[in-house]
Amino acid sequence: MHKRPRLITVISWLFIVLGTVSLLSSLLPYWNQTPAERIDELKAHWIVHLARAVSIVCGVFMLYGFNWARWLVVIWIGFHIIISALHSPLQLVVHGLLFAVILYIVFRPDANIYFRDPRAQPWNAA
Image 1 (tube, rainbow, N blue to C red):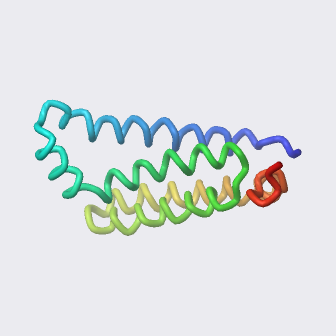
Image 2 (cartoon, rainbow, N blue to C red; image 1 turned 135 degrees about the vertical axis):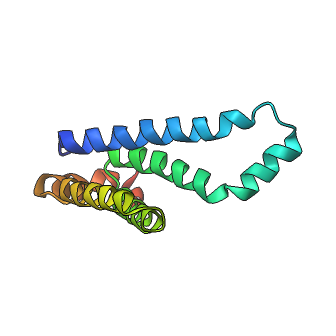
């Protein structure tokens, strides 16, 4: 079993914490609404809530060394680059820089070794 690189731990926990905080902050304002209003809100913003939940899933499974989770992080941040291009040039630049930093961290040689560890493969679970 290979030791998890510190930067992978940091990125994973950032995804978990920021995903949880953003998901809760987007759902809590609707707590006092009627169930029908909550369902309408969820239908209207389902992709936003899904993206936030995906960030939590990515962080958790990256901590366990699942290779698919690091690829999902790359796709997740790539999705945010596309979304930020629709908003402002500043958001596009910020998300582009975050993408570059995350790519660097999750594909470093020590991260590659960590994510290739067979203990994280679901078919080897005993």
